[in-house]
Length: 476
Image (cartoon, rainbow, N blue to C red):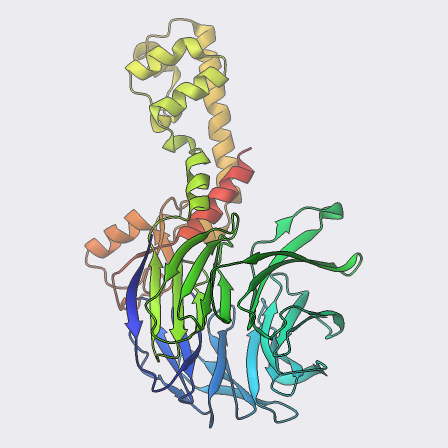
């Protein structure tokens, strides 16, 4: 289900953090550098490594678009980089000059949080590069930070173990001891849990710490109903302090890395351990999933970054796939057509349709002539009923097509994608259409017209799941 597909060993010292955008991987290290790699073939970009910091780089993160990278360091600065050319966009100096341990963009990338060793936390305007608000925790260094998926609040974690919740105006909503020996990392699942009153959304948060524990929390916050944080459960598996944790983009998996040198992958729904990865030879300090595919990066004090590919679905995803009906009529099998006939009170026609191998595409192409001449349906009333039901299907399909989100449409076919893949230009395409494009010796991107650095196509399972969920919602 998961396999190691690449190892990077370019840093000269401990790898402290790694981050992924839809097309890039960033890593940073005690060696004072940040390195950028292409996800298409894991080659290092021409303008990498990025050099500015004068001391160890502790954390790095991408903006939502992936065009900006933030990095922070013991030198007391947080630097914003243009990922396309490696140029420095801004140098944000922590007001206290204290070493900056963590930085995070808000979901819309309008704000950036930086947390420092003296407990100060700064909210920056990421567009004007100006300081917006500043606050501090009462004890310890700030070592962890995560924004809620809706951007209404964020949490910070300290070396004293305190988990603090802040709203988007930097007002402290809540603080409590989460890990007795100190927090090390935290992350929100991007998928909210619906429920509660007045359409309230709950967000799943994972935190980990020196107490060897991973804790799962459920948080809700609205300006009208206020804030609530509930402890839910503890995930077991590590036998030493847990240094890092991260949710997959679809929220179905949680991964953690530890002083015990292992990486553990959990099913977030059942909280079962799916995989234990033991390739690193020293402490695992960082882990991160890609934002749109099931690709995982893990970094370690052994100076390496391992890249892992999830080739098969998680158990939860497999269950979803098994239960998911074929939504578009043109994709129906002969059995699907038979089930549809029974649902329309036309079960007497099942034998005729099967004898003539009528699948979904054939069904939509039936006419009054083909019903009479080819299928030999003599009753005019029965033919009329079938045609009326088929017209209802066509109308439904036209309505559905007009509502399809643009990101679900293949740029080549202009149709809803059934098997989306990511090409080396960072865009998603229908697999068959892109393979045909490449087979005709078109090594250029259909979107940018630039030469594709690689013809490798990576399955975009997260996008496929989003399409399936959208279909399930809109075809009921």
